[in-house]
Length: 130
Image (cartoon, rainbow, N blue to C red; front, side, top):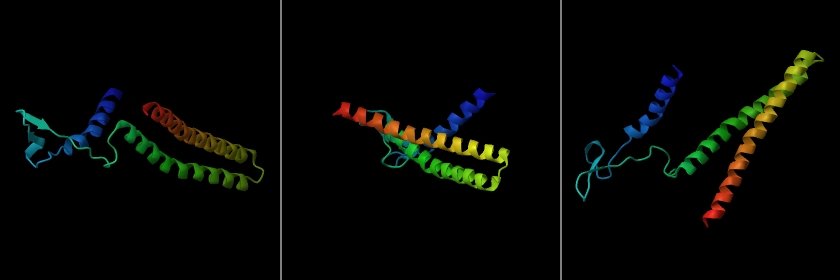
């Protein structure tokens, strides 16, 4: 059953690529005349114009995840602080607040560490290219 969901998910991810197949000269169904004979199919990326490689796509995904994750981390840190303040000596609430703060900090370290690691790897790879 899990395989069916995985296959369906991959098919839905590939669907926009198939839908946005547009030829350069406006001919029908993605077919463009090829000077060498036959037909040539052109698939344009439905993504932003600056995303032309896997590297650019991964950087864009990482930046989007960072934009989503930072407010969540901040929310959990504020939640942990609020729980500490309202605990009033209750050991169970203090334990919950400590756990929330610990998980928020671990999440922040993992996410920011991932961003830092990707920047380091990109710098090393770019230094080998030149």
